[in-house]
Length: 259
Length: 300
Image (cartoon, rainbow over all chains, first blue to last red; front, top):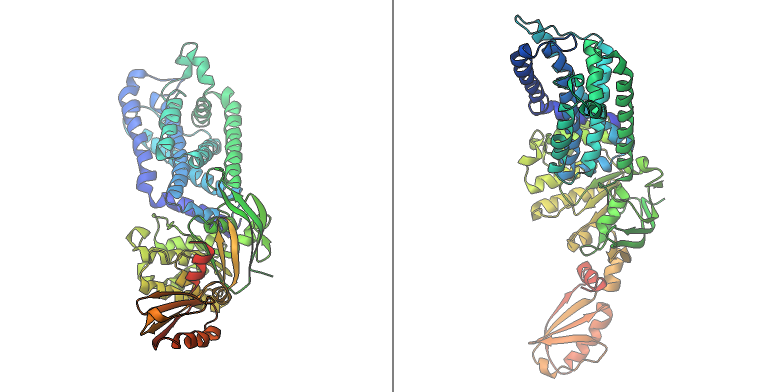
């Protein structure tokens, strides 16, 4: 690891840490609200799902929803801001390769996603310990949980890099988040089990990659759906690699960022 | 070895615009080199290719012998760029921006911190070190741009219109500082629209127009070769003046304006011819400038 790359990575982490009120706190707050409204208020009426209290059941999906949004937003908005104010030139003229630049942005976003995901899980463990909590929430397999959080945040951070490079405006970045990730996340089974759906919706759900990501985290945290675990892991790692390669290639060639 | 060597460099943009049509340029180590040209001539494209902001179409360029593509890391470490447009990060303080900038070029943090303080003091910005760029004036932002170019102590500085939009006092301060850096051994490549600035600072210049280098050489030689000196002679009877066709002259009121390359050689002959019919009251010699040469070469 050289100083050049580590400095760039430090800059990317420092950027969201300095702005923690805009980057970390809102993610925790919105997850807390979901848990209070859906888990506590409505959970008791819905009842347990796959042997878990409703509150515990929705926690992995909520964590994943936050990881996806935060990691994507971090790298896409960091690049967009740098393009808009032109200080991306400082990075493009530095002695950094396309791979190093893309990794700097990707790891920065992945760390933000990981922090948010872990913070939400820890917050839920604490909440479930409180008196009158709807159910007990504990992590069954910490290493696998961290691996899922990391690979998913890496995937969406790398995707954010690609969109950050291609996008011409903030609107385009927001559009991906609002019109693609948000519906895919909600339809990926954050608040329900896909088994509750009738055909063809159940089969259609299997084509949604976010369904597999949420299922993977549900297995690592709640031990639900062991048979889906390998497919989930394979998809998470494959998407991470694929988007990293594309992002590096775009920086190497200067697509849309160099004349 | 030259500091910068450019050979048959071409750039055609996706729009079909041929920004560079195969330029050759050699810049000696330690020189203060001016790249001049009208808007859209190809100056910023050339700088963009050297620094990695623009992809070349063909040709080659080397920085201190390092190819800008094959050895891009070593080539880029040798350059400090102050771009034409202000490009400061709005999230961080000036000090933080400069520490990060130094790190991008491999300068360890402790060394960078010391260097930041020294440079900010030199550029009279030390009192603003904890401010973000939003709170700086235009002139201060320009100086931060120069500080960014200097922070990793590169042997070559590329300054794309470093004094654009700054007041005269600050411009003179920057000129003095740039001369000082050049005297310390740094090679400086400067582009500017202030021809006076280039004439004052640059020992060598190249004039680029429509993507081609149309003149390159020592500043003084180009002025001497291309621009004309003007001799203004005030006489009592301008209507009676008869000057031979060898001279390019015009008469306005009672002042005769003669343009010539060789003032010393021609002036005696001119005076003799004029004194045959009129009395000379005053003689004023205006030396040719780089601006004249520039306008002549670029047909402006």
